Image (cartoon, rainbow, N blue to C red; front, top):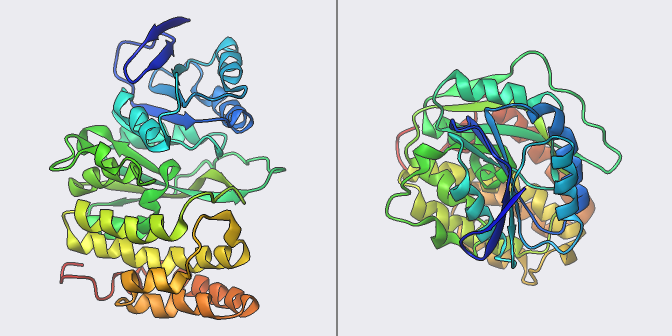
Length: 355
């Protein structure tokens, strides 16, 4: 194992990789989640071992737990890992950016250290990356608890090729923020235009910088309907929910996306599909988040002009918890119908005529 000192005060520990450019970089930013990292690496091991098309990179943000030992054990078991250990904690956003900038693959997939990639998913994803030149690939996920054992990927493909950025945004919308769910064609995201990726450092949404840069150059996308990712339940919080997914998301979307139509679809999806569930979660466990203001006071100035806010979000805020739970169930039914029909409700009354 070679150790050298790199930029931004990091100690870079690397194993040699093949000289040719990898098809896909799987980059896992991590900090003090050794047990979660062990879980995801155990599922990845058989899928990426001796696979030259994959670069597996771990960017350790100065973990004080057993993370280095977990990585060493994986490497001793034959897993080829490019291990970058920061000598000090540079913050989550800067660690995400480091992953994206240092990735060598044609496609870059930042993957959360507490999510799981189900068995058999990597060969399928590699085949999708090599099928055509995609700007973005979107992956679906499901929630799991501690006792969960992921089932293997299905043998058949369940994907949709999309050539319209508006249609692609209708499928993904707020989940452009979900790092584990988005694979980026790095060449399409560089250069980022008039902005710098680092402009979004400290926003908790720095991943939108390269995702939106790629979306601005969108030519073809792949939406994978099969759920190839498992997301750990009851593992969210510790941030300002209404600031990050309210004012910050709205600001970034309106300023970074060149198409007002695409931006409006993203925000429509945020109101229609994200906020009902998250408002119910906040109603059940507000202490998990840092916000202390009343949700309507924070959200209505941002989304009050969008009729979806009054149908999908506002009732969850004002109704008692039991009734709010029923309302969220109703919104899920409406969204399921909208999805089946190709998202006409989500795209209705966007900011210009292009649909």
